[in-house]
Image (cartoon, rainbow, N blue to C red; front, side, top):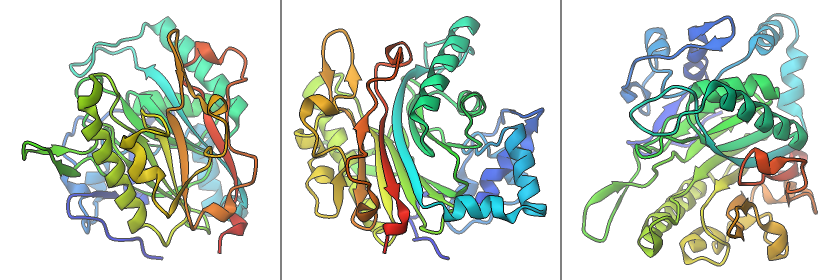
Amino acid sequence: MSFPKQGAKTFVYSLAFLIGAGLCFANGAACSSNTSSAESGQVGHKVSQSEQSTSDNYTQLAKNNKAQKAVKKSEAASKEDNDEQFNKQVITLATWNLENFFDTVDDPYNDDVLTEAEYGDKLTRVSSVLQEVNADIVGIEEIENAQVISDLSKRSGYPYYVLIPGNDRIRGINVGVLSKVPVRNAVSHIQDRFTQKDGKRSSVFSRDCLEVHFKHKSNFTLLVNHFKSKRGGAKTDAKRIAQSNRVKEIARSLSSYPVAICGDLNDTPDAKTLRPLLSCNFLTDVLGHLPEVERRSFFNTRYQSALDYILVNNKLKPAVVPGSAKVCADIPEIEKASDHRPVKVVMDLSKIK
C-alpha cells in the first residue's frame, strides 16, 4: 500500500522510525534524547537505526511493558491479536484538550511547572476521564512532551502514543495521539508556511497538524489540531484562517483515505476563521446537527463555547454511527481535569466503500 506524497518540507515518520523510540526504553519508561534535528525525517529519506535512536525527541510512539510483551507475542505466535485490531469494525474516536498538562521540569519554553503532587493528581484525573470516555483513538491537545503522554498512556491503558513537538515557543504545548489501534506512520506539518499580509513567511502551525495513519484495513487517517487561540483579538484571525485553509488542503490531498480531523480549533462554528473547513463540500462536522448548547465543549467561569471538533471526509462519512457524536459533559468531576470536555463519535468502518 502506498501513501500520498507530501510537500518537500513535510516530515514523514515511518512505523520503523516511530518504534525507534522504543530503543530508548528503560523499565518501560521513555528516555529523552538530546538531538534537535529532524532533517532525517524528510520525505524519501530512509531512517537508519542510529537516526531512529537519536531523533525520538521529534517523534515518540511508545508501548508500556504490557503492550511491549503483547507486540512481541503477536509477532511470534499471536497474529490474531494484530488481526483483531486490523479488522475491528466499530471504533470510537475522541478528542480532548487537557488544559496545560505540563511536567515537573522547568524548561526555557514555558513558565508552567507542576509539583510532583499536582502532576500525580492531574495524571489521575485525566486518566479517569479517558477511561470513562473509553475511546479507541484519542486526539490530545495541550500536552507538553513525550514523557507526559507516555505516563498518560500507561495510566489510562493506551499501548500506543504519538507526539511530535511543534513550534510553540511561548507555551510549550503540543498535540498527540493515544491509541489502542497500532500506528502505521505519522506525518508532521510543522514546516508548513504561509505568507502574511506584510509579505513575510510564517509557520502555519504553532502546534503541529499531526497526521497519523493507522494499521487498519480501512487505512483510517487522523489529523489532530490545536489552532491559534483568540487571545489577542481580531488580529489572530488571519492565523486561524491560514490554519483552516492548510488543513483543508491536507485533507483534500488524502481524499482517497477515510480521514477525520479533530481538535481544539479555538473558534465557534459560525466564525469566518473556520469557514474553509466547515463550509467545504467534502468535510462534515459530526456535531453539526446538535443544538448550540449541546455542543459547548469549553467551560470556564466567564462563558461556555463550542471550540472542539471532529470532522470527517466524504470517504469516512458513511461510517459515522447516527446519534453517536456527543460532547462528554456528564462525566463526574470532569471539571477538575480540564476546562474542556471530550468530544467523541462512534464509527462503523465496515460501512466504508
